[in-house]
Length: 268
Image (cartoon, rainbow, N blue to C red; front, side, top):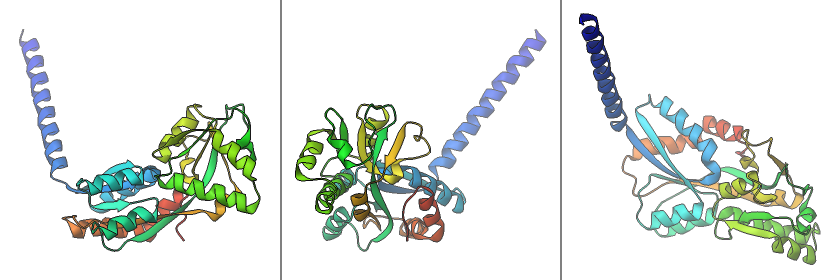
């Protein structure tokens, strides 16, 4: 009986100690200063690592919280009163609109990107160029015209027409084959990855280490002329401006650029 009693007492003490430690960890987490970053969906992987590195540089007394979504969705949230400290968009137009409305002051372009066609390797359609997208029955996903990746796609298709990569009839066939227009680029990637469509127009940065066995990238000459610019700004309503400005500066720093380059962003 004494042995059983001692064992039970030890278990109770261990559980209590674990509970105290859990409470202490929760208290420590809640005491951290927070930075809320609204960032374009295409920045998910790169900014997640940038956030971790910044937290480490700050002695882990800071928590960077991200909201990744389509640039337009994030802009609308800010206009509707949702609070954030940093806004990083995949296009200049949304940033300019927010600036005109007083949501931010100056902004800087910190990275650039370009489009590629992602083709599911299991698809019966082997995409080699834009003309491949005219094939009867091929299923294509692109970004909606309200979000940057969709805007860039429209410009790229027009550029291909100007350059003679496709003709007007082929352009029309491509548009007929578009099955879905998504509100952020990660949803386009997901559709192609799951083979719900055969091909999708995404950023080169969306072809990550996680998906090369399923997705292949097809570079298009006209796409090289349509460069996506990524601006970043500190929002006017941000309260802890010194801390927020340090994160902003970190993204723009050489160290931040190296991390962005790791994920195939252009930073020069």
